[in-house]
Length: 193
Image (cartoon, rainbow, N blue to C red; front, side, top):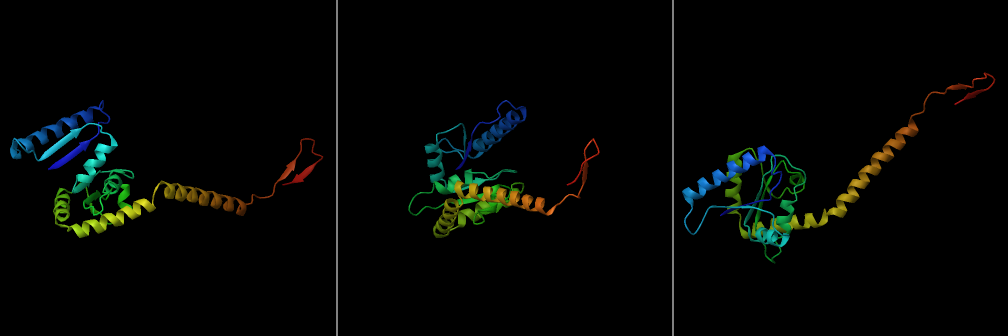
């Protein structure tokens, strides 16, 4: 089953309303064609949920597909990994190469979200990974997420700001404006600056 969890956002924007209607129609068509009275291939949850319920969904998911076309850090992928708390947790993360987190999560299966064939192949690859491979990747990603936490990012950011500030200060010391003569209005006093 494909579970799509979508938290409502920008509900008053006409383009979003149109996209939601299109998604609803497509899901209905797929479920009508392939579903049964006891099972539907796509489960679509359009709502906000408490973090405990979201974590339970992440924990139960065999594959997490995070494919934004453009995104910042995208914390969903990190939440998925960290919710794999069982002693021998398995699961596979497929991540858009355009998500900011992709730079730090090279162990994931990365895809171009514009390439449907690539996403299909990634899903097949994810389903074929052994439990041992999945466990190893999840543990590696967990260690990275724990290491590169908010404290790491703040320290890194502040160090970068300080380096830029120091570079500007150093540059300011190197730049010496040409000497100028300051003449007072009465013309009697001259001072070289």
